[in-house]
Image (cartoon, rainbow, N blue to C red; front, side):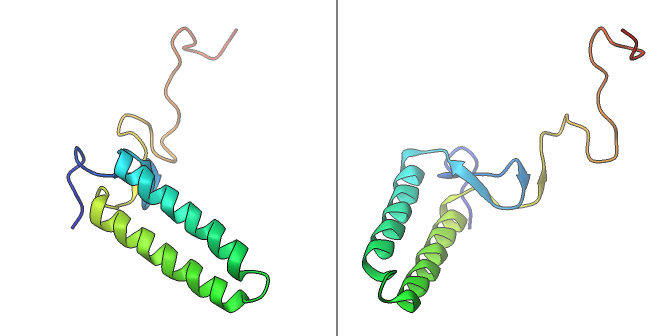
Length: 102
């Protein structure tokens, strides 16, 4: 149920699985609200009610992940740019250094 790349609020990560930083202002708003909710929960719940704090963190994170899945790019495993070598394939030759000597 993800959005197309052009309309997605959250970009897919370049390496690994999931989402990276937001691409649009709506994503930044969601991420900011999540950060504020963490701060408010920490100030109000953490010293006296650690279980309530843990539950609020779980619920807030679940909501953030649900919004990322709904409004972000399709999450899939990424190995970086397609023109970069994958692990075990060696590095590209640098211009001007063909044999490795100085």
